[in-house]
Amino acid sequence: MTSVATNTKTTKSCCGPECCDGEAKTVEHKAAAPAPPSPERMVDEVREKYGRIAAEGGGCCGPNSCGGSAEIPVSLGIGYRQEELAALPEGANLGLGCGAPIAALALQPGESVLDLGSGAGIDVLLAARAVGENGRAIGVDMTPEMLKKARANAAKVGAFNVEFREGRLEQLPVASGTIDAVTSNCVINLVPDKSRVFAEIARTLRPGGRLVISDIVLDGALPEKIERDVYAYVGCISGAAQREAYFGWLKAAGLSEIEILKDVDYLATIREVAPAEAEAILARTETKWEDVVGRVRSITFRARKGA
Image 1 (cartoon, one colour):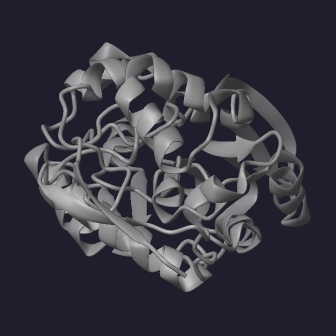
Image 2: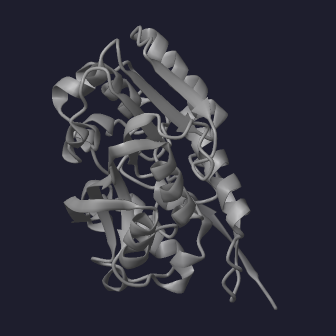
């Protein structure tokens, strides 16, 4: 097999291996698509990528890639309120979500809430305000850099009813039956074994406990090159599951009363607010817009564990 090397000037995009460096690179174009990465390699890629985001800023192939200044307008656009964002310390909002699930959780004072993939702490800190000093908000994340950033953000605002724990979502470091409400924002799609995540959610919830989650699902298959693209996975696209399978795992875990609160075209949103990022994904994977339009959905839903 032969390959042709070409010199290209990279744009400022976190959607590829030359993320954010702005330097000329030598890129090899090969005829065959790469083999699908293993699940554990994908986990390593996600950890490395989000560690870099925590340290340097930027988003995951979305509106705020590479340290832009779009966190506030994007967050408002996906459902956060201005007063919520104003109460957060600088650096808590990295613009990585695809929804605003905390408001729909309807948290009450004294409750315990768990955030899966808590990042820099935006939803944990909002939840902590809602549950008050007699409640508690726990964030779980597998990226040490994010945990360090989240703990610093909590200290900035004196949020002493919060805790950030290191762990994988497939094996949550949380005792069974101790949580009133679970949330997650655009993270479960990044986990290879999503069925295990939902089983863990059900395990940690008290009987009758609830969840509100924002995530990415698929309505239809994606082109093979996007499916095999590591950086599309890290950017919340090709790691997503088909809608039917996703909610099948949810139900199999014993979670029911499912209600869809939001369902929008995720790629269309990115294309509108960050066209360069959307075009970078399409160009790199040689994909036409009509082959993906409407298939990648940003959803927010609620469900409940049986009493």
